[in-house]
Image (cartoon, rainbow over all chains, first blue to last red):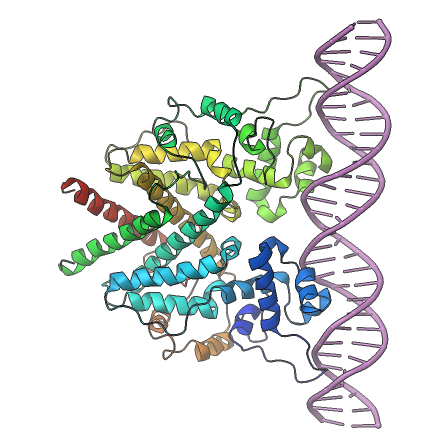
Length: 255
Length: 255
DNA sequence: CTTATCTGCGTATAGCATAAACAGAGTATG
DNA sequence: CATACTCTGTTTATGCTATACGCAGATAAG
């Protein structure tokens, strides 16, 4: 489990909220949490998450590896700090009064954050993440978007999760579409595949495959005829439509 | 990028579909792909994904590390094989005629697969994954569930993605809820947090926090008053409601 | 001034994935 | 049948990575 401070908070939480006081004694520090996290994010953005090693971060800052450990207790802690820093949400956002548009705007903000740093998708989300400043900010904003919806608190939180997961999935899909260009299966390989992926065995999927190019993800996706934006919007619209139905059921009010 | 066979297929794909012929010369093999994958899955199920090292898998089979490389070209390839093997979908499933119930059943099947091997959630999903047998089977089944819905092919694929991501998110949440029991922040830490997470800064979230216990995930979630099942169902119902609305718009037919 | 604490560095350790080479087992070919 | 070829499993080695430990020096507290 993550290291904790004397007060029992996970260290990453305390650091992220600025609660971790710099020591008063000893020589002046050559580094800071902010500088270390920023350097790590820069490496991740340029070369991907795998390139973020303690050695690489230290070197980019002109220090040796072990000096980083004066600031973070482990690489995991650094990753947690990177995660929240990367997913920055603006402090002040003016949302539309209409909850539907507000939710769409909120989803867009979360989406842009993920797109700016897609490597974040590969980091685990656990109990510590939710206590971090940008997560808290995003949650508050999402709840603000839904303030006029007749849902229970936990239902609203559930909606926040559904939408943010939807957004994450589509950013991941974008990444995979980009990567898929690199995989070009020659005709011979495609022929072999068609001998096992047959209409008899997969009667619904094979017609879909034949109508488009096969791409990505755990659950297969056809190349989007209307582009990925349309499919992202479709998913979001489904959720919002569902919410409108729910609103109507609970208030008798027609949206 | 993943290794490929002579025919240009990713090796993992060829192996998973049984296209990778065993060599005809040389001494009899002491291992097989199936045995290696099964041993790796057993370790992952018992101790988590981090415990799956080439050394550990080889040892559990009574061989030395490097002999595994006669069968898989890298650890990544082994992980890809594990991923698809773990997410097994039955060959024959009879779905309800009603597309709503069919989609719910499909979601349930995917959910149970994830729950049986939750470490799969930590594995990246990329272009190779979708060509693997169980992914193909899951996609065909999902499309079968929606055969009566008036959607374009790529829209159906989009729905498959939305639902499977929803399912994955909730299995992950379940895991995080289990892990959250381990984080007990003492009163002192909670007090410190409440000094930064204030009603002035986060007017919508703080009341939610005060009405329940704070838990998990990137976007914060309150402890579910009605349990996690209710929230899982809520999310799925939203998507299905949205689909009903879409069906009505396209057919003029009232569901 | 003395003591305590902190900083950054150098050295070391353990774990892990994988390359390369070797000896022997089994098949294909002439 | 003998020879050549291919494959198997093992051993040894390499490089990378995270992190422990100890040292010398810098700075603050008492």
